Length: 223
Image 1 (tube, rainbow, N blue to C red):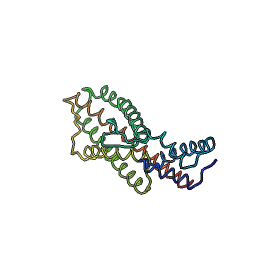
Image 2: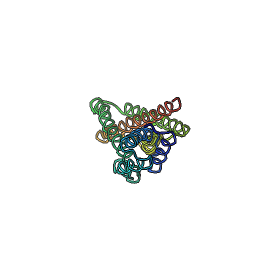
Image 3: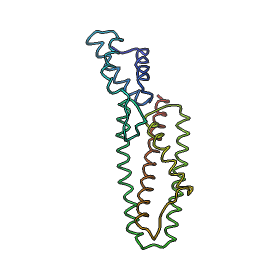
Image 4: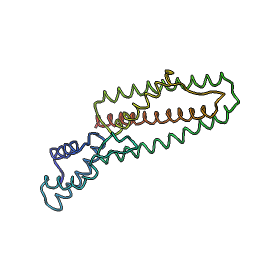
């Protein structure tokens, strides 16, 4: 038995009441839950309201509010949303760290006592320009997400991460926080190269999440 449009809307409303505010996850869950309800109605012959209640009871654990140290304990979301958020965060952070090691190793090899003060100054200016360029990109994507007037898990992850990274990027870019690259302190210089490289790569991954949000918005608007 196929559910009516009104019944599908009822499922979506129930998901929203359970904290599922993100359209991509809501769309996915609505499809799963609708299939389970249709199966119960067809096999057990129960009314829609009974099937709806029973199916949501089975999803109760996945919909309960949860938090995690990985994304900040103040960020409470339904477990199914949080689990995806934590998986995404871990995956992107690990990839960003591994990629950030490449310029760090490059710096360790080519700049270890082999360059002069001018080379370090140029490197600092390049880092500042990159910080400002990524900061500008974050502002643009934040505006586009706000303008889309749609919430997705991608926009959630982007906004939560990008806000923190934006502050560091803009402070480094404008010189409020010094980038400590010095021919006299190679260890500190190496740490800052790793730190900034991680910051750049992870910020680019976050911009990728913003792009995925816009692609989802484009998809549902033309469906």
